[in-house]
Image (tube, rainbow, N blue to C red; front, side):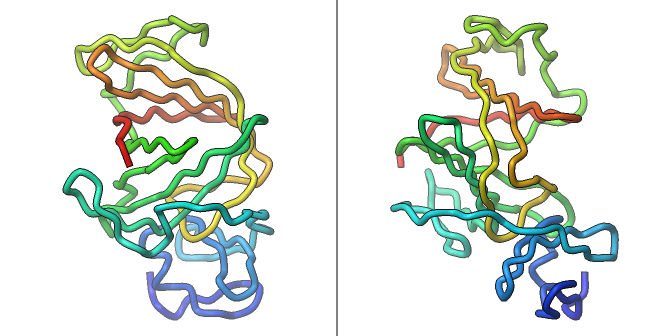
Length: 198
């Protein structure tokens, strides 16, 4: 990506911010920008995100269990009784590798995407107690519900739409591991990680 790329709506330079993102919000006009190969397109609004107290901020490096993370993107999901926030922290300029840090009711989870042959087999149903195997360990479904993306800020490694609904399912192992499945119209992702005391 070059530093000369600009917002298709207002012309503000955004090229340097696209090194780690497929989708970002323009800091000047608020337009959502999607990278399609070398081209940029405007894709609407980034939603309304009410400020709330948090220990994580876009662009500020944090230390969690001796590892450094610098969030560049922030998504908020509403699940009816409240919301949770997810922060994207890239690890490499050469690809989508990085970690997601989720914050829900004061609890933090650090997760990485599971891809390819490492993916667990999707269960036929998402009933509480359903088990899946991952990395030679059994995980049991402990929580599932639906949530809606209501806002985002910064840059993200993939495209997401305001109003998009996700079904989420959290599986836990006897050793405290966390395995998450998110599904939406046309796709799904597995993530693996752990809960961390902030």
